[in-house]
Each structure stands twice: as C-alpha cells, then as structure tokens.
Length: 194
Image 1 (cartoon, helix red, strand yellow):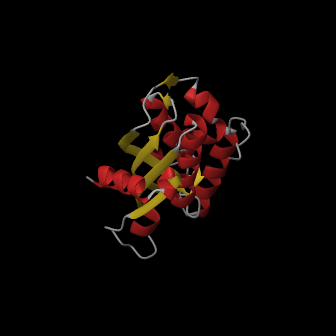
Image 2: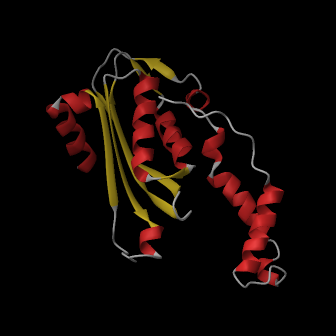
Image 3: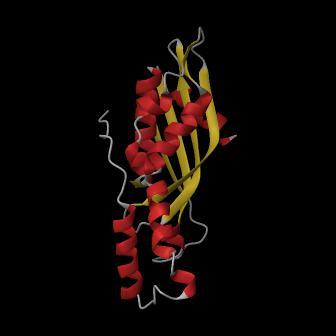
C-alpha cells in the first residue's frame, strides 16, 4: 500500500484570502456583518476537514497491537464518517463497517475508527476511501482477511445535480479470505447487515 507523505499545515491566511475573493466573485460583500469572519472560519474548517492528509497509519495506530490466540472474525460497525467529495468539495457522510480475521494480532478497537477518520478527512471518492481503509487494516493487523462496507449520502447528489434526496451509495472492499472464501464473506455481510 502506498503511504502518503506527511504534509505541512495549510496556510490558513492564504485560504482565508481565497475565500474572501470567492465571496466577492459570488456577489457577496465580505465586509457585511455575517461574513466578516467567514474567510477565517472557512480556512480553519478546511484545515480540520482535511487533517487526514497530515496523518499516517503508523502514528494513528500508535503501537496498539495486542496478541490474541483467536482467529475469529472481529467486526466493528456503525462507525460514523464524514468526508468531502473531491469533485464538488461537498460533504458525504454515513457509516463504515470493518471486519477482519486475525492471525494472532488484533488492533485496539478505537484504532479502527481512527483509521476510518484519517482517510475520510481528505478529499475523497467513496470507492477509494473504502479500499484505503481495507488496505490499511490488512497491513496493520497482518490479517488473514478484511472486509469493509461504507454506506453514505452525498450532498453533491442531494443539493445539486440530480437532487436525489434518498440516494445512498454502498461500497465494499474484501481482501484475503474475505475475497477467496464465500462462507467468510457471507458471514461478514450477514453480521454487518443484521
């Protein structure tokens, strides 16, 4: 799996200046009461919403590996996620379910959610997000197999374009025994969907 290089913190003053220009271009007055501090607020929000670029899996997991004699399936589901579509820079949000089979090493449960957040807090497409989470869990847990299912609503589909309010996108990634063994995949999907 290719690891992203750690990036520097974004220049919030520059982002604020660009947001101010955008407001003017949209026909707004950035000096009116409600917008005076908007450029700075947007810059701060975008730095937060894209913090995943400045994180890496090793630091997120932070050595939280535990020996386990079991090789049964471990599942964490209903992990909330919030991301931004790279095509329109509008949010998408939903849940993620992760399952994996250990080969003697398990990850701290909160680390699974932190891995989801790290990849979600980047400009994304849901398909790639799902794959990145699966690859990271497979590598970090040195798992026999991994399954990830992401269900999300995309504001770029809801607020603009086709304006489909109830649409939900579902993506999955299965690796190792989750891909090669139909029974394992079936067990995972029944537990995630149950």
